[in-house]
Length: 119
Image (cartoon, rainbow, N blue to C red; front, side):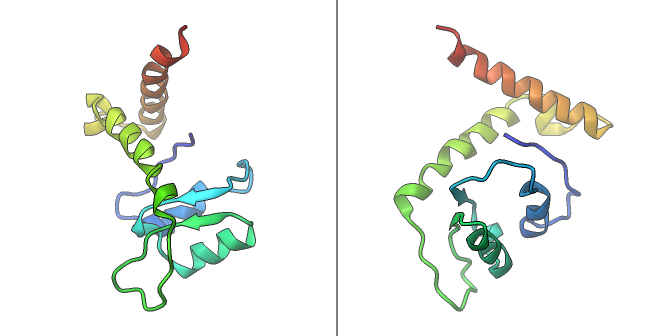
């Protein structure tokens, strides 16, 4: 998982370039919500041979389909964000600096994952 901070007023499709940097491993599928439904994002993903699974916005003229069975896996990511927001310091962002906020996200992610690693 990669975490980064964008300004609060940044829309999803403008923050897309931050998250899809070239130094990441190439995913096979991009599962995103309709906030990422932009022609530029779809073209970028198709050029990199990544299957975009993004539901359409209501205002889209050219209709694009999505594999709903594959898109249901996105629920796991949403539940992960929900668990992260259960940590009060993340949900309310008490930290003054971006470094300490990202560090708390990392610590909380490790804390959530530890019970699943011990066997």
